[in-house]
Amino acid sequence: MRNETLAIHGGYDGDPATKAVAVPIYQTAAYEFDSAEHGAALFNLEAAGFRYSRINNPTVDVLDKRVAALERGVGALCVASGQAALHYALLNLTEAGANFVTVPQLYGTTHTLFSHLFPSFGIEVRFAKSDSPADVEPLIDGNTRAVFCESVGNPAGNICDIAALAEVAHAGGVPLVVDNTVATPILLQPIEHGADVVVHSLTKFMGGHGTTLGGAIVDGGKFPWKRHAERFRQFCEPDTSYHGLVYADHFGPSAYIARCRSVYQRTTGAVLSPLNAFLLLQGVETVALRVERHVENARRVAEFLRDDKRVAWVNYVGFPDSPYHVLAEKYLGGKACSLLTFGTPGGFEGGKRFYNALKLVKRLVNLGDAKSLACHPASTTHRQMPPDVQLKAGVRPEMIRLSIGIEHIDDIIADLDQALEVSVSRTAKA
Ligand SMILES: Cc1ncc(COP(=O)(O)O)c(C=O)c1O
Picture 1 (cartoon, rainbow, N blue to C red):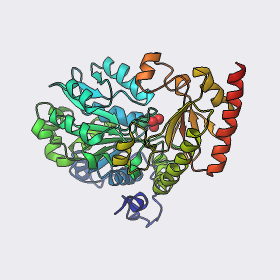
Picture 2 (picture 1 turned 90 degrees about the horizontal axis):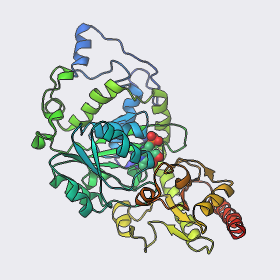
Picture 3 (picture 1 turned 135 degrees about the horizontal axis):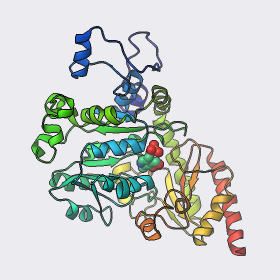
Picture 4 (picture 1 turned 135 degrees about the vertical axis):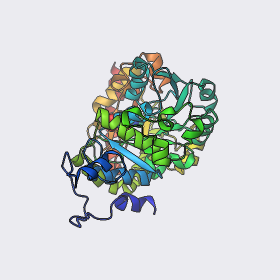
């Protein structure tokens, strides 16, 4: 089935107990065993079913299956937030003493996770100079466990050449992990281009209404763990924390996601609640329609800003002169995302003046809501970073990031227009 259909029906054939058409909210911590033997079979991962909601839950299970279907994966694990998903996705591949390689254009908290938290666990994170596969390749060595990128960088707006990064990663014997939050599977399915693991913040376009945090890890099911058994012993040798289970033998192509659930979610518990899974499912049902409108509104806003003399620069991959235009055509089918950045004159203060003048467009740190949103990264998401690191992450001092919503386009443009007027007159006086 196509994604418009999977977004509505994926993972759910009706509730066997009640025939409920909407996915029921199974608000339960635990599940009764028929017998000691049944409980043992569940614990041995031999019988399908549920035992405790820190491991799995029927409502979350529908979302797991739906997101896996949308991303063309063999399985998914939905967790409490996008950050929890990133954390688990990479811990499942690395360990103290090992490293992974990342492109530099990252969401601010992911940058913090990589540059501070993982190194404090003894995991080295190697930042490439750019998102070019030629800059990533020399950083991969015998101790590398993954290559990481955001398919569309937040807030930089760069587009990674996923097929080329996958080639470089695979030649080095490691999987490619892609955060596909900004693109969504409606615009891009990284697994189809060679990625091995896809991560999402479901909080953004997938949920779509700014109500609910959630994250997902999707297993592409193609990485040959056994061929690289020396490097990925965790999938190929008996797990002493789980009575000697060998994930690659027991789960075959789903070894990665099965271990993610039974090692990381089971022991550290960043669980998605059934109610939040239900709310995210409501959002996912309309993701294809919403993304279409987001994309069209963003194109109109980008054109308005480009043609306006009060604007210093616009970074929008839908313009033919964008350095990422060719990749946008290849990976997003010419439908540039609804995230764009621009700058007004006046540097950091000029950016703040515009930001403070907005009325309809919300000032906050989020994206992918039905509402139009604006962020001034230099004063919020990226403020912990020194200016040179901000620049490497694609953040200029005056930069405003817009996540264009699905309101009427004339109302969005009217608000940007009045905010430009206010900021330009205040900049002239300053
Ligand atoms: C690209 C990207 N990945 C991950 C995250 C983290 O997601 P969450 O806020 O759901 O933890 C964000 C949040 O903005 C993001 O933009």
